Length: 174
Image (cartoon, rainbow, N blue to C red; front, side, top):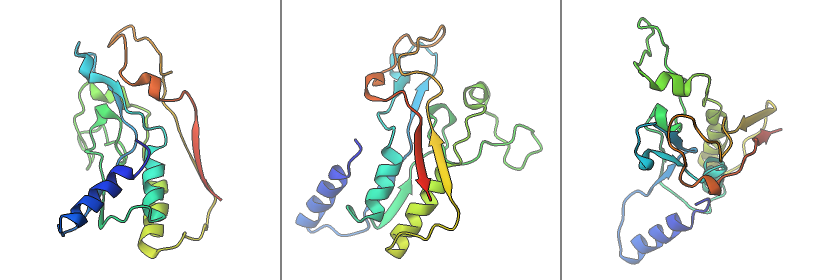
């Protein structure tokens, strides 16, 4: 769902019932996985090609006014929604994490450019105005496999694959 209508309805209902307290709004980049474990529930893609950008922009433009923004990632490598750099693969690295078979799943898939987009919109949200562009930046993202790809291992079908686009997406700050 690339809208904030559920957030707006939730906030309106809280207000109607006299509830107070901070409203925490989750923002997450795309998610997809196929764990090759025989369970069709472990083979899916979230229809979220533009979800991260659209939710952050809606917050910055005050379509919805959360008190707190939760960047929902869990750093769960197998679901591909992490924002941090991948951990070092040397046991002496300060950020070492034993990813076992997940390392093959995420190798070469750097998600840290999501932070460029995040920094822009969080600054806009906090200051109430679009930040000045001091450096031209373009962030690209794409899935590495076509939405209807058939795996020779893993699940034969991926849930929600009809709800995503085979495309290269770009966000620019120029």
